[in-house]
Image (cartoon, rainbow, N blue to C red; front, side):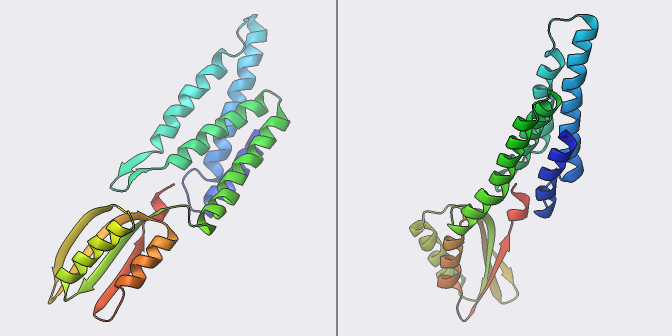
Length: 208
């Protein structure tokens, strides 16, 4: 039961090309379920009154596993959703291992709702921000750089790694920013014109 529920979450992760896919998710749920079952059986076998001793340490172990999924780069912390998913998968496995199949199945449904429906809603209503690399190639670098700074200030968006470089007779202005879909569209519409080559590179695939 734990393996099936973990694999169901892993399917969503694999479809979105995120870490901790089908095998990882299934194994996390299976392992925590087995630890819970073994902890309970050993407690009865040896007459130990603490049947939750092994299970209580699962949380710490999964915490280290989740921490390994979190990295820090120029865009900030990445892998937070993956780490949180691994953590809740462990809880689902423990619930299944403890025989609480209804709880485990319900939790799996809630996780999938959060990963699929809430993610879609965030995209639909322009709530979720994405890490985007903007690159503008132009021969009028001074005017474009000034316009970019004014535009980003008006949108209340902070830029990272703002830099200007040369490419032959043209100049390249590029920077990174966390923007939603509406803000991205505004930036491109205002700066994309004749004499300015606009490139928008999504860094979103590394974010979750």
